[in-house]
Structure formats: C-alpha cells, structure tokens
Image (cartoon, rainbow, N blue to C red):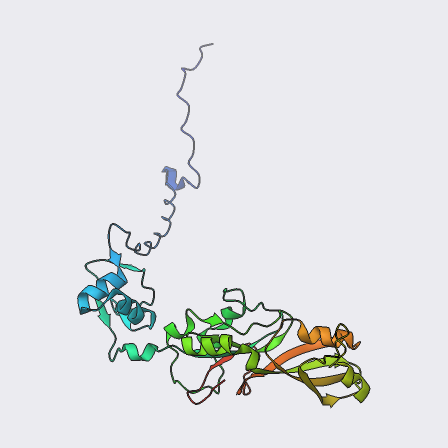
Length: 289
C-alpha cells in the first residue's frame, strides 16, 4: 500500500480570523493609542535667558533694585502674564512690560496685624504664623488699601512674638519706624491679654496674681481684673507693660490657677479690632502704637 506524499503543514490561524466562503479574512488591526499631549514649554535656562530684573532695568532705564520692586509688586508682565519673582528668566523673544499706571509709590512699607491661632509658632517661616500672610486670609472688613500688593506680604518681620500655645495679636512690619517703636520702646507698650482659667476666682485669689513668691515685697508690674466668671471658668484681663514669654503662665501657676487659653487683644493703642482668628488686617494710616 503506497504512502501519501508529505504535505507542508497548514499555516496557523490568526486570532479572530474566519473563513466564510472558503476565504481567509484577517481581523482588523487594533486601534493606535491616542497621541500624548505635547509637554509644556521648558523654562528658559541660564544659557537661554537673562534675569527678569536685569532685562526690565535695561528696557525702562531704571536701577536693578527699582526693577525688583516693580516685579515684586506685581506690576510687570511677561508676554501678558504677571510675573512677580525677580530671579525669573526671560528669552529675548519674550515681551516684558510694566502694567498700566505702575508706580513705585504703591510699594511703601506696610504693617500687618495678625490674629494668630494657638498652636502656631510665631516666626517668619512659611510653616509658622507668617504662613497666614496671604491674600485669602485678609479680614473681610479690611478696606484700606483696596488692593493687596504682592510686595506687602514679603519681607515681613515679627517683632511681637507670642508663645506657641497662645493666640491673638501679632504684628508683622516692613516699616523701620514701626520696628524701632516695637523694639526700643517695647518696655513702655502695654499689652492687653485675656486669659481663661479653670474655676471661679475670688478677690483673694485675684490679689495673689500680683505677688511673686520669689520677691513677695515687690509686686508684679501687672494689672489684673475679672472680665467674666462662671462656676467652670473665669476670664481674666491682664494689662502688662512689655512682653516676657511665660510671664502670665507663671503668675497663674503661682496663684494655683490652671490656664485654659491666652489671647492678646491689644499692643499699645492698637487693637485687633474684630479680626477673626487666622486672618489679618493692615495697620491703618491713623493708628499709632
């Protein structure tokens, strides 16, 4: 019996192929993935561009420091977009211009009054009380000036620190005159502070607050009165010239009182004036410490 001749093996069927009517039909090719969106244009490198302050100074014929003040005040645009960081770099092809009505007189030093929440450190770092000096945290009722300039929120120094556990009025300033007043005359400025303590406070206990156990013949230089009282808590008003961290807590501890909360309301003749906790306002042109 003869053997059939060897046949080549049949080609493998492709996935999805069918054979209607005896003809092979190839499955449609899978759709191509969507094209990725192009990356945003890269910032100019040091080799590609020059500092914005240098470019502006050359273009408008001002000093480098004046150019930086224009930029920090939000009065400079690059290709129509406001840029407020002087170290930013621009290319030769980019258009740099001052906004309409730009004037350095709008960047005079200002002083800001913050109602610090308890728990925040009083420092100039972004993670401390200074981190609240942003446009969105300005008190709603503050109307002067009408517009917050970006330069107003930079280089603000705090010269009236508070304990981390305390809250209330903290002053930030750019004005050297205010800075001198808050430092050179600090011992003459009266600080009004409200302190909540546990339980009731009778007249005898109130008198003990003015006595320093270490120097019983020299009473503490402070005036204390009762603002409000209940069986659970008493609100005390302290008026003390100068500020020494921990001074109020020590006085309360010596009198056997447990401090629940501390909030400074006034420094000299300047009050918080209803600023909500976590918000700030400008020192008014008529206000003096």
